[in-house]
Length: 454
Image 1 (cartoon, helix red, strand yellow):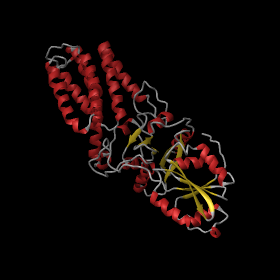
Image 2 (cartoon, rainbow, N blue to C red):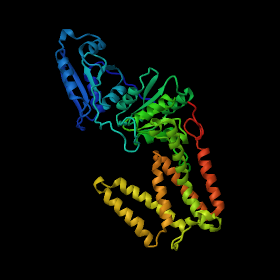
Image 3 (cartoon, rainbow, N blue to C red):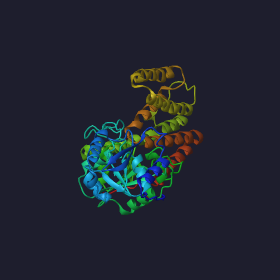
Image 4 (cartoon, rainbow, N blue to C red):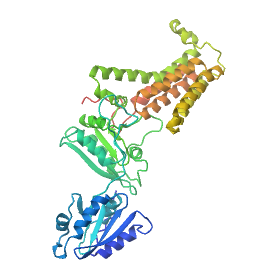
């Protein structure tokens, strides 16, 4: 992204005229300009109301108002270092960077006689408390989670990795939004080819904004094929998980205003990991991974296999004869399964949008009406309800939301192909699932089944 560089003018009046012509100072109430007399010279302060720490700014202004005319140095750097008792002070000579700093929350000061702008970083962002994320909980370990402020997120990882090799590169993406993006990696462990690929892709992004933050960045980095639903990135809201991935040699991408980290490279085995796998002993974590993998496979194949055997009762082994549908089938099984797939998503959306005080009544109503009454009315068979209930609960055994829907789409394809072409349709569906996983490429160009040995 190339931007036009406009140098700061010679006089304060010219600089103020340019700033007031560029910014809607009069129209926008939160953009503030204030003129003060510092060392006998007229100075103009620009800041965003709501981003500036008032207590810090009052102390800085108090110190500036005490500067005498004979104490004003000729060099602006000497003035910034000697007269401003604050750490976060910089001098800028380009209006593009000045405007970006101002709209990011920093205070910009133009002083008559200086052909530059003093930028004071005394901003404070509205932020929620650092607390454990609801989606990615852990039985052990820390109880903190990423928030929407990128500086807090980098600090939480820096707190865990006190090593000089930890590098966090700051970039910006979007012509209008100019969103801060942090590329985090261990300089002595990260794959240099992958790092260069990711850095070049971020720097070459040509977009007006990242309106949906991390998701918009992911779509700009990797133009996914719509027919393959498996996710290309792993996301986590836990700083301990992100720090562990950094120490494994992976690359972590943070986006301002997004309370999660994007982890690269990734594979299907990384997708099914969760925070508990890092805190339990090896034997326990391996058992949990195997159990999670088997349950995920069952979510894909349980209902299609059930449908296949119900369409071909003679294929069902005698030892499993009890799974056959005993009651009258009023609606074909495939329609029952598809309706319940949609109904489960409807209940999930209803629970998401239901106020917490009404969640318990909603659960009772859904359990009674969708469960017992729907079977007694003849709409659904009890066996179908049982297997779909297992599938609905099993989807929550893995933390990745996108992976859950990818498994759901594979299950739907298997169901439809099995209903249309019977046994051959089931075989075609299995081939489709295997090909979707094996031929899925991540941003690093590696196979989805790649296993890192680090």
